[in-house]
Image 1 (tube, one colour):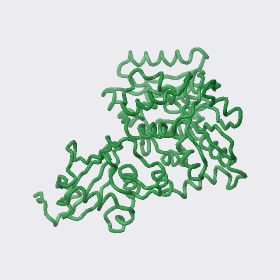
Image 2: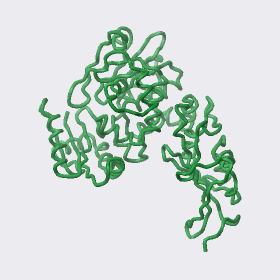
Image 3: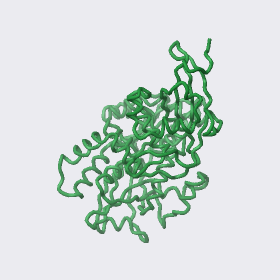
Image 4: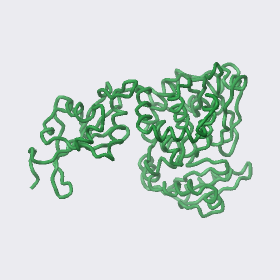
Length: 451
């Protein structure tokens, strides 16, 4: 018989972050099922050190990172990374229902491994908290958590020594540029739809990569800890004219993107400007067939000239585009990254399909998924890729299945075996995500374009 709410039955509390889906379960006292939600927050979330919960056997050691990640995104942070209270504007929920912090959370009695337990589930909804992250404290916490791994990466990139801050910056930036320009890791491994700076750096350390805005955050993450002065730069194809800052800010407030493609091209790409020894350096460490930029003096100023900027010809895929670079307000760039991390639930698909980045771009190949429901739709997609390839007589395989068996697929596998394996592994989650947002019943093929 299922027991009633009594103090002899073990009790657990599951926190979940509404926006990211992160969850963590802790053991609580049986009497906590009658504790107001506000006190649950102070006792089991807003605690300074997760190790106390581990030592008290309330939190499993291998759940510590997830718990701290929940703290990172749901609590206010001081500049040194100390967690405080829930971010103002946060709503606590049980399912869709809003909870009164001064009342108890609903308790469910569930069967777990042949024993009944009490389970409290509280969802933390940050949808109305706006752009309030303390990036200094957030990045400090994230750096400290994996500082040994990050420092080893830096030492490996710089050869355990460097003569100047300029050398340090160039070597670290080039190491990040050399990492894959890819989206496949959004659908394999940890399946993070959009990575923060530390998540990107860990991904690179593990042999994978990221896209431009993620790589830029990773580079700034390292150089901020080094104390180097930097600021964000936006760039995009044919983004000529003044940066439409107010219009871009409005997009981040309304999320009404209708008719805004001409504006969004200004922030399609990100880079960084550094000031070292009074010298301005434009650094583009993103790759995706965008050349490695480490430009100072007149070359830097020519690209960043607000009145008559010089374009940079770029060929990421099948055709050239003129990229224009613009100095951007840091808060606008950071809020853009925050929005992609938290407020755009299908951001992983946006990067692959809407931004036309596919699953990976290398110097020789572009590999992209081909979603379809009918043979007619597949033939239309095949014709699209053949049209893209035609002007330069590029070779392309378009397959209705998720295999790399054609001439270009086999060539890609031979040149990029790790990326190829990751792409093959990404099929199930990618299809699941695509069906979730575009309707069920799709199949997924592959296009392999030799550049």
